[in-house]
Amino acid sequence: MKNYFLAKAVLIILFLASIDATAQNASKNKLAITVNDKFKNIAMTVQEFKSATVSCKVFESKFNDHILLSGFKIKYPGQKSIEVQGNKLNDEAIKGLDQLRKGDQIILYDAFSQHQNFKTNIDVPITVTITDI
Image 1 (cartoon, rainbow, N blue to C red):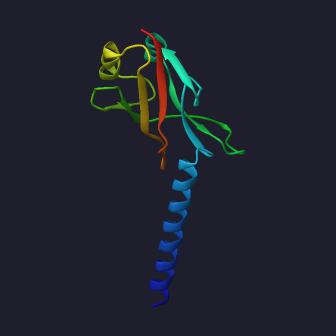
Image 2 (image 1 turned 90 degrees about the horizontal axis):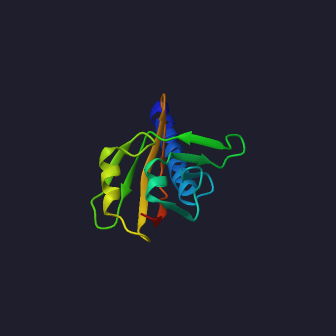
Image 3 (image 1 turned 90 degrees about the vertical axis):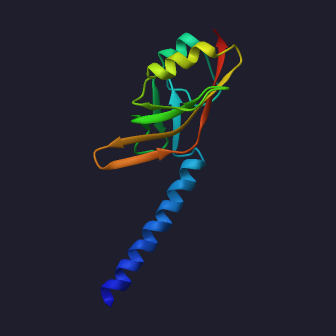
């Protein structure tokens, strides 16, 4: 009976910790998706975006650094979402750039980073505005 209550207490603590972690991610104060080290007001040409590196900026004093992403999703206007593995655009994502016009906004979202047994999700999307074709 003692083990049952201990296990239940541990589950409740883990659940509350996961709620807190999600709130921190959403507030942009701890994690943000970055494109070429930028996470706000991103404007790029198609060529710049084609070769861009997507990463995760950590805003913790002990980690104040970038983490390479294991994958993310990308959405172009009028096109279906594309899932990308790694931190560079894949062939499908590069092909989708052909249909973009100046002023279009690209959305990057559902990013995640995985290192050994540690996985983190970055739930806050970012937008990139295309400045020139």
